Image (cartoon, rainbow, N blue to C red; front, side, top):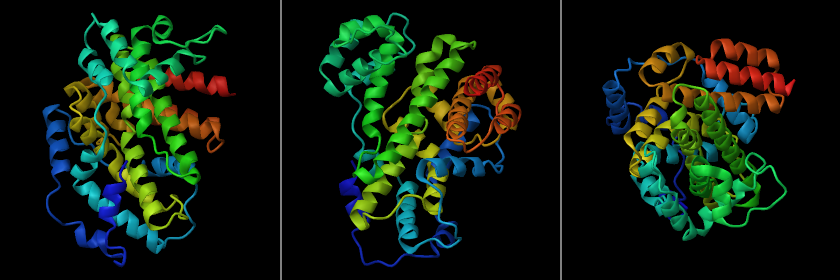
Length: 361
């Protein structure tokens, strides 16, 4: 997706890495992205949210995605060089946004109809029929165990709609587009891209479940979309990293601490600007903007009062990370019990985690 951009970014292949990059640039020109997000946060009447040491949890989840970082405080030369270059790109992401695919007509139709109770499914089905990749995802979803409880295979869209309903049809369209943004480079990296996609799917499903039992029950379609795309920044940054490796050195691994820090610091901001670039509805933009500021559970009660959807999406993402780590034996049930008390707020999220613990034990 970003081959041309990466070649231009690394065109000066003989350039030596700048080990003082962060010191040289930390007081550089004003960051327009931060100002815009801060202004949006101010408009929502949310007070500034203090940074706390939850970075350890996020880095631990990146360890699951990409493997443990080498046990050294020294960054290898190549990793630091690539990280610095992509950090420069994240500061002015317009070239990244310009390289993204345009929204398919079916997804544009979904976005415009999210709050419309008289959703015109016939129009959407006709659009999907013109988009084979989207149609394939819709049919795949209809054949999943979640929706299809019979042994009869679904092979066409109308039958898929009969099983999925309106919300399920919307899910299939969203899955079809977002899955195309999942990194699919050389075989060596495919396992990592798949993990990111599975985490995104899990977050979308959990968000839908939380909202289904909440006062926002009628907004489950919006919640699923938000859950699915809230890690879009990880997908894009990882795609940039893998394409940079292919251009610079195909044998390098994406488990450098520098790369994980790069994703941790830039992912949610990039997600917001991608959604804005695609002209997503204001409700979705406001929720994504707030994800860039939430870093501790102590702020969730206030957030829930001001924007409960943003609270549910943050919790869905956190729950997905916790459950995935637990399933891979990186943490135990006592850790999950502590997380339930300390890291989440809503009753829906607490109930979901309790149920997950019981099902896993």
